[in-house]
Every structure is written in C-alpha cells, then in structure tokens.
Length: 612
Image (cartoon, rainbow, N blue to C red; front, side):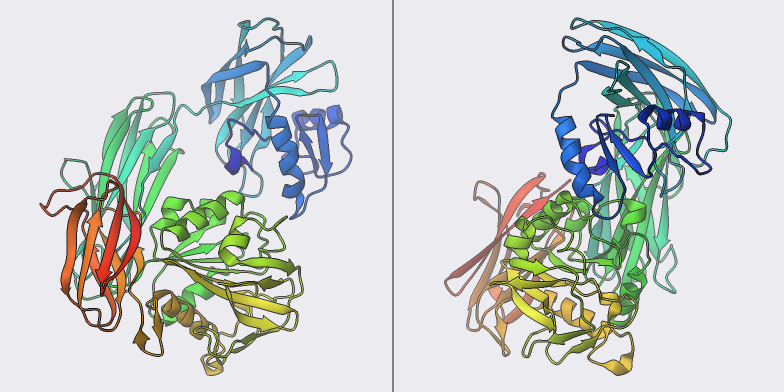
C-alpha cells in the first residue's frame, strides 16, 4: 500500500516487541496502546487490527482509504539529515484550517530499513514537543537532535507525527522527512532487440531529488554477457547528451531538482553471437554514498526480448523458467519483485513478451496498479504468460483484467489437482498430459469458468485450469497451475517445461490468421518494442494473393510521415523496421504514431509511442 499511495500519504512505523529491535520507545508505545496480541496494526491510533496473514491487506486497505479521506488541519514539513553518528531535524507545524485539538504533541522517530523483512523499524525516539495551534496560519517550529550509537543495517529516515494527547491518541498528521541526498534515475525504455553488428541506444534522466546540492558519480557496467563474449565484444558506454562517449566514472554537480540527460549505448562489435547483454548505469550520491540509483538495460541480439517477473515472495523459483528458456535458445531479463519492486508500464512495454510467475507465493502483492500496467501493456500489443495458482483466489471481485482480458466469469478457490490435460487441436496444449508433481505442489490452484474469445487449453478434475486469448495485437496465456510443477525431464516429452514454454512462445510469435498453413487475413501482429527509442520492429502478416503491400507511418493528425514498405510480398509473416525518422531523414518528436498496413483492398492499423 505504501507503493500504491506513496509516503506523502501513508507513513509506516514498525514498533518491535520481543525481539532484538525492541527498545524503550517501542515498549512505551506498546504500553500506551495497551497491546497484548502480536502482530497488531494501529491505524492513526483510532482503529486496530490484530493478526496478519496473506489476506490482511484486504482488511487494511479500506481503513487506510477512509483515514486518507479525512483532511488534517495541520501541515507538517521538515528538513534535516540523519546517518552514521546521528543527525538533526527541524520540523514546522502549520495550521491549514481551524484546529479543534487542544492538547497535541509532536513525536520524532528514527526508523531504519533494518532488513527486507523489517522495513520502517523504529530505532530511536526524541523527546516529544507540546504543540499549540488554533487559527489557520498559526505555526510552530521544532528542532531535534539524534545520536546514532548502533550499527546501521539500512537507510535511516525520520518520521514526525502529531498526536492528540487528550485520548484517544489519534494521529492528527504524519510526515516522512525528505532526504537531502536522494538519487533518482528514470528511463522511458529498458530493452531493445538488435541484429548482428547493430547498436542499441537508450536514454536516462538523472535528477537530484534531494534538498541539498550534491555531486553525483555516474558509472557503467556490463552485468550480464553470454558465455565467451567480453565487454569489448559487446561494448557499453554513456554520455551526457551532446557530449563524448564515456566508459569510466563521471561526476555531475546538481542543484536540488536539477537534472542531466544521459544516453547509453551497447554496440555489438562481434556480430556472430546471439544472446542478451545487461548494461547497468549507476548513480551514487556524494553527500551520502548509501544513496544510489540504477537503470538496467537489456539488449537482445538476434533474439526476442523477454522479461521474466519472479513474483514468488523470494522463493527463487525463477530458476526453473530460466533453465527452460535457455534450453529453448532464448534469453531473458529476470525481474525479482522482492529485490526490485513492482515492474511499471515502461518496463513491461519495453519487452516483446512478459512471463509472470507467483509459483508458491501468494498473489496478494499483485495490486490493482499491476493489473492496470498489464492491461496497458497488452493494449500496446504485448504478450503475457501468467502462471499463478493464487491469482484468482486473491481477488475480492471480478475486475477489469479478469473480466475483459482473461474473460473469466467465475472461479473456485484452492481446488488444485495433480494433472492438467491439454485440449485436442490447441496450439499449445495439444497432446499434453501434465503430471504436476515436481517443484511447487499445485494444491491451492484455482479452477475457473471462461467465455469467448478466451479458449480453454488445460483442464483438470476440478475444472478449467488454463486458457489462451488473443484480441487485436495482444495475446495472453494464463495457467492456474505452477509452471514449476511441470516435469523438467526431457524424456517426458511433450509433457515437460521445455515443451510447454516453447509452445507458448511459438504461439506468441505465430502470425495472426494462420490456419492449416494458409494465411487468410492481413494483420499487424505486434510492434516490439513499444514504446520505443530509437527504433522498433513492426511484425505483420500478408495473406494469400495480397498483391502490392504498403506500410506507412502517420502522425496523430493522420498525415503520412514515413513510407516503410511499398512492394510485392509473399504470403506469410514479415518484419519492417522503423528508426523514428520521417521520409526526409529527420528525427520525429516524442509522441504517438500510427502504422497503416494495406494490401488487397484491406487495411490494418496499430499505434506506437516514440519516446526521446
């Protein structure tokens, strides 16, 4: 929820009792609230939830939304720094409306990201300060100093909150001190597909998001290369836009909110090896070297771009997918949500296909924002393989993704079976009988009822457990049994992971309108990447006896800006490359463009986004 709403709206403190992080401040807070059962969550000290578990977020969310809907009469702002040895904070409390609370006090708490399991851990509490405000415009300024005499295990921050001391101890407002040394890097595009000997170019914006002048050091590295390929074979470099290409470290001194625009490139100097290269651009704060930001770019040479989202609560089951991809000759960028957070739309849209696994983790971390990002990705012509035995059972209702994209009308929770049976004639599951006894047990898999255009492609004793659906330029494969539970033995062909994944990816790449070897209709199958910079590939299908084929690019006003294809094409799949230029060789501006494919009196359209 913090990721959903941001720390300007939701501030968390983790008070520990009964472990090594317990201290006098957490003991006092525990006593103040009269807590005797653990864990207990206090929402502004006016509502309490005892217990935890995978479904507790469904209890938390309406409470949080209700508290957010109540405006606070007091605004809190602050400035300061806390790190090794200690720090200082100066906070201002200003009445934004008439204040009815007659007895308030300000609390100042140092919190630490002590471990991935224990964020927001309270470590130190300063002396509280009585605050008296009445009419709009009244203000009070308070300064507090902290001594940090423990071994720091993570980033330190300060939470300021104002509470009513007349009981109950309602939180009037809370605030997370802004970091004076905050490093932010952003890119509109994370992956590219290139041919042998070509160059991939990316852009990144480095911003000083802190409150102090900072000197930031930028460096570049090749984090992943195929076996036998060196960093000079596939060479990475960066530069400030308009400057010279660099491979070493560079310092940039930036005022607060100042930005610098960077370009990153990966050049295939070898020209003979397929695979993926991960190039990472890193920015480190000079004022606080623990503050850093990275952008990782995946360049696929003569391969489709694939993103593997490992969303299994850190169990590490992504290795099974990685092995199956490698056995089929593919490469992938692996995104572990426990380490990197939730992938955004720009990340998803950078890839031709997204493989998303929950394995034996629950799917409650899969938020509405994730669903929105996935729907937008699909609308841009994406391909998604979602394998999650808990996705449906984690939903409170049939939302837009389930109803309008998966076309599932109802489901039954946790009725998993040890077998999944393919559907005769299905492009993916024909002839398959999967024995689901390997790796992750499918005992909590769901069964569903679906309607057209969704096509069921796996069934089990409890009901339907797999489907595929294609609408327009996008495709989905959804299985409620874990991919990891499928056999990994080659001898079990076709009932093994390698065959299943190969068939899914083959179906993603299959030309629209292909049936029994005959191409029946004109179609733009997909644009990858999309959004793009500087180039994209437009995959299309030409039907039998189409005659002359034209492919033109249009701006939002319908004007033709580039003619890519005007020639006779044989029936079947084809690909055209657009470099973002117009017919005069001039680079076009950031924005939305449309591709129009015409042949045999038929037209097909798709939209693309050029980002610079």
